Length: 325
Figure 1: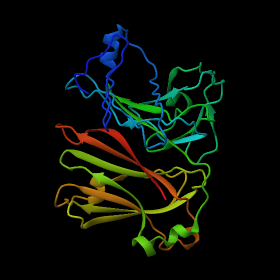
Figure 2: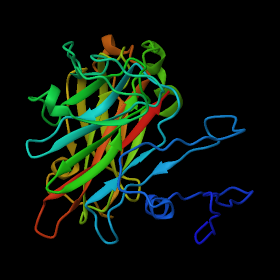
Figure 3: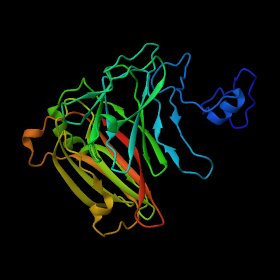
């Protein structure tokens, strides 16, 4: 679609076959002579029939050659959730900003959107209303001033909004990602402990380990269902040739626990032969017979940060991998 001519009313020709449509905010602002503003983009797909028909990816970029702003997020779906999880607490030198996107033509009343630390019952609410259809930015530390990475935060949404984005801001750089819907309709399933008979292991999800000379990779399992009170899980690291390189037992993780697994520390000075590979999270019921009834829903927040030339300093950007059995 690059170079396609626009008509005066903003129409853009598209192919009748499978393809992508690119909407560049700079082009749109220039075409309609718009000033800088903060808002939402609504996509209306006429005649679509199914969640897998129309998807979009959202890229937030700085100017050419400028990595001050990068994103890893995609469409928010059209249904609002009761709860969202996967919102990270900030480090001491960071700000985490939650964008509450009111996608409905009605006001969100005061004390309707709240935050709490994962596994804790105390909820703190924003006391300001949110008008119909705007995007409102809120600093997580305003409600949870003592929350610190690697603690995780739940968003109490009350079906008032679709999946929101958040930004991590540090030293003039910002990274954009999104939280995910936390399932409220799942129940623990004892049959999950029998998956090894079919798959050889209680398989959950994989995550890439990027080339270690340039990237630092971390993983942290977090709950994504309200019934998930504990999770016996192990991480397995594979080299680029598929050979197992290391194994880490998280143990019987409780809902409030936030344990980060750093691949650098995990290898403890040893190298991957290929310099890259992947890790897998698997259920680990060895020694935990009383914990075989677990929820079939987990998300692992994986952070990959590019190392700077000045040493091991890195800037984290999160990728969320979700498994639903």
